[in-house]
Length: 353
Ligand code: SF4
Image (cartoon, rainbow, N blue to C red; front, side, top):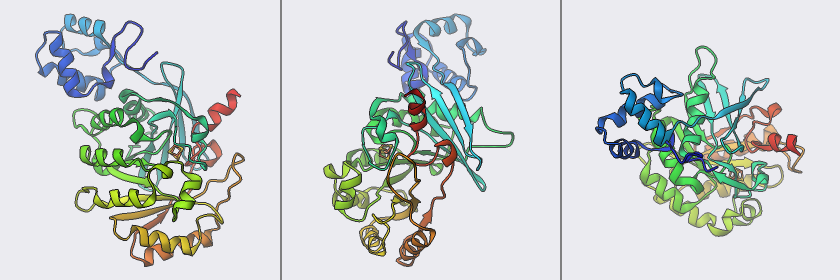
């Protein structure tokens, strides 16, 4: 079943932007301002049925129910890691599954969400890539990961940051991601600041340009290599868009004042973790408004790859910082529930095998 319509051919109103809801409402012969009322009901009041819209006439509610439906994700499982990380496994209307991860850290509570079922990018270090590409998520399926996670928080918690770094390549599903970002950012919907939302890509250059033009959210690029040879070996996308092209596009992106692109660098022992790598990385990133996030590889039984020692990671970080580029190390979270970076989707498939 396609996610945008149901078996009665009704449209999923949670996958519509506000202008599209206006078209729907006007198509039913109603005033334009009704669209904003509907939009607020579905995203701010999180209604489960049109019948709950008490400031809208019964007849309009009934008409809307004939033409549209309200998508909801089914929470299949919530696992809690020893370190407080929570993995949320969602069942979609067509039976597919995606995962989101809530990651506490100091004052922050970051929600990592998915943009596709599976992923076509085939990065060799990433277990999500093993699933292959299944399908794109609809705008509702992306935005609802945030809206419904809000309802599952512990007392006193609030999501502070949202990252599109879960399953899938967001820029390969950019039309739907842009509608979902509109819903996350709109003060009449989920009302998050663009400063708190980050979209990460493996390096789809056209999508990067389009996203930077269309939305003020933060950008992250999964780099993971200091030479084309290295990157070709672990990220097939590099054969289409090599480092030179990718970094030149990044250099020219129209970033708002004060914004920097985050370059994620998964560190794999003996592969891309030497000081020569750090030197090349610095040289590559100098012309770009860049900061670096090092991600020591999350070891797992499915890959013969190792995580560098703390000393090696520290020396690499020091070198980048001394070269004048801000550089942080992402601590590994949720390893015991397969919720760490690059692990999403793996357990779900394993239990089915
Ligand atoms: S790292 Fe990201 S882009 Fe690469 S295979 Fe995994 S989910 Fe896809």
